[in-house]
Amino acid sequence: MSLQGKRALVTGGAAGLGLAIATALAEAGAKVAVWDWQIESANLPPERFPITAKVDVSSSLRVEAAAKEVLDRWGGLDILVNNAGICITGSVLELTEQDWDRVMAVNLKGTFLCSKAFAKAMQEQKSGKVINLGSVAAKLGGIVSGSAYSASKAGVICFTKSLAREMAPYGVNVNAIAPGVIVTDMTKDLSKGDFSNYESGIPLGRVGEAKDVAALALFLAGPDSDYLTGEIIDINGGQYMD
Image 1 (cartoon, rainbow, N blue to C red):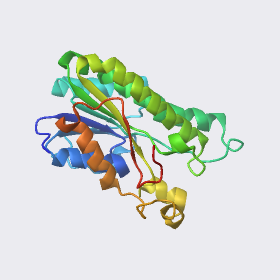
Image 2 (cartoon, helix red, strand yellow):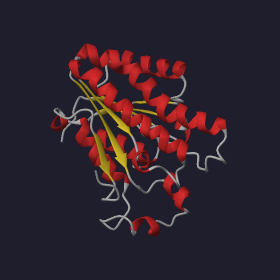
Image 3 (spheres, rainbow, N blue to C red):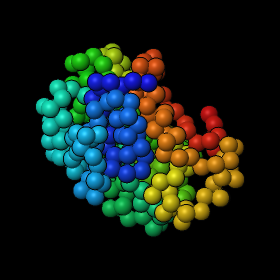
């Protein structure tokens, strides 16, 4: 698949799923911008990622400023991947109000703010692909990941469907990916590096890799998904089927 000449942005793209997706898009020929609140430690090669910025996606002022830089330099955006997210674990009794608000601010509000920042440009060019990152926890409820994380991702799923309806008349596709257990730094922390308990409940017998999710994102970013919008695509090895 060629994305030659396409302009893409991946939030939370300095590591994990975000970096895997950003790399796949770049290898397919896209110009890729990466936003991440820890961008300084990422050491991303500028020849592959010509725009990098430190962005807290929960800050409207920072998102708007960083979006202006992208639009001023590139004149538009073809692919937006809303990947930035955090997970604060704990039971309802253990979570603080601040924990809840922070997870919602990054995972859900951040997806809204970044989508809003580029919606007008995509409407004007009458094309675009928006790819949001949900989670299987949004459908199953989160025990390990916690209620705040699962609720925020459920919000992302509903927001995806709403945005898809709004943007469809302008030729913009909006879809979401709902990963199951994927090996990343975050899931390694949650599982303490032992995925055997998860594997026993996954029909395909293994946890996922970042490249699995990146391949799906690449499909959603390309022309083969032009008639697909408002969909939440599960990628979990059969752990959850609907």
